[in-house]
Image (cartoon, rainbow, N blue to C red; front, top):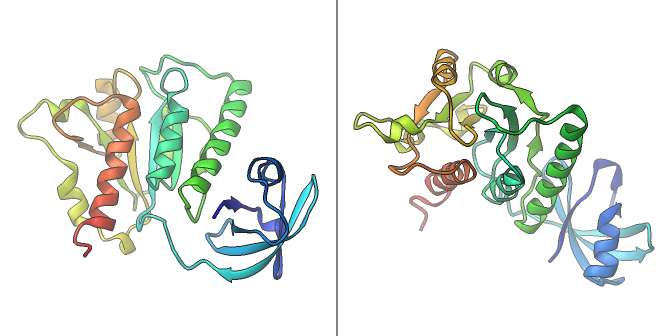
Length: 254
């Protein structure tokens, strides 16, 4: 059953009104009619099976049939702080990271980031990333759409973190030493109901400079190895998210 996220303004007691680009998708792509059902998601994570009772080129009116009880969210809020990569890699990171359960993405300008976004491009890219996150959330039947932070400088990114966050950064030097800190022991110590957020900081192509690594450590970030191989920037966050999902959602499940 197709899922659509509907802003709070579209929820009217026992009815949900769908507007915007989703109307075209329902009418022209899915070719749904009155009597067909869709799943509507509320921004707070609530979802319901809804039956279409009226269609027009501008709006789809539905009535709530029953709530959806299934929760597809990770039991821990994972924030991916991503150093700006080249090209459209950030699109891929947000799309696949959303499918893997990330709660938010924070793009930041790292010392080795090759790309530079001016204010106009920042706004355009963030709007695009929000659209990608919404579509990926619908496809993967997420309960919530990940939040896309505005692009920050390196210093702003560090300042945005809280003392009670668990803060990690993927550091390639950890993969080159025999005395490394791997991800698994850190996850073993985490109690999802006792922490606010888990931040995973990923560098751009070329990784973090020594100055950046030292600054991260100074502000409470722990360097971790994501396996013995050196990963591309667009792979690192997905490795981390898949590991977290396995650890908290699959390990020990019967």
